[in-house]
Image (cartoon, rainbow, N blue to C red; front, side):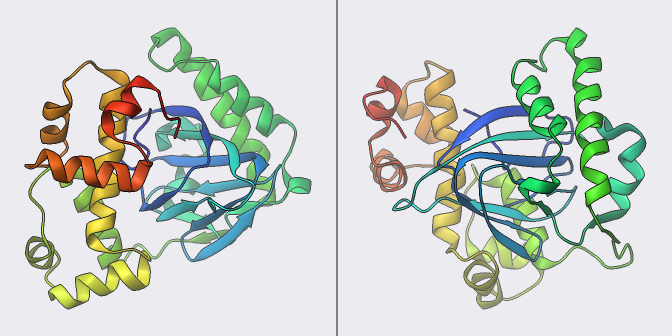
Length: 267
């Protein structure tokens, strides 16, 4: 279980993502999604696309992006790669100073080296120091094959981060703390009404649902990767009431935390 929303500049993540749905988030690194099966609605910046097998999505540093798999549809299976921007080598200046006008590559524009490199990264754990030169080589191969098909647009460096980006960045660091609309209003210097409108109009969710999504995703990570007791997990995720934790976990995952840990229900 990996936490795709955490804004950690030094983090690597190589994983298969099945039936992924996750609200707006962003990173200081690069995120790529290659779809192998099914379909997934992906938004990067202001562009939204229903991705099909063989297509690639690229999110440059500080670009807001989200994923939605229709629970009544064919599902989705893809490969996700998240890595520090510095891994891009000679592509780093372009990654930091610009973004794609269209962040999606259709199947015909995806060079065979791209899925090859992404599948190879799945077999190259980043926790081994001797793997890092190999990882950098694969990332730069990915970018060298993708960049000829991308029309880059310069970022407006003089423009400060928008309220949506500030909101996402703040919550990615403080979601386990007692957060409320008053705190967000003070942090962003805007009214509670304006904060609520960002969630509903820009992120297409509510404050409570977004916060619970972050917390439950972290809980899933702890339940899979540790033996910490469930009560402590709920507290670590920001819940002061275990009943609330169980209710929100089941609402988002379709099973209770204990069932999830035991693997009785696959989500």
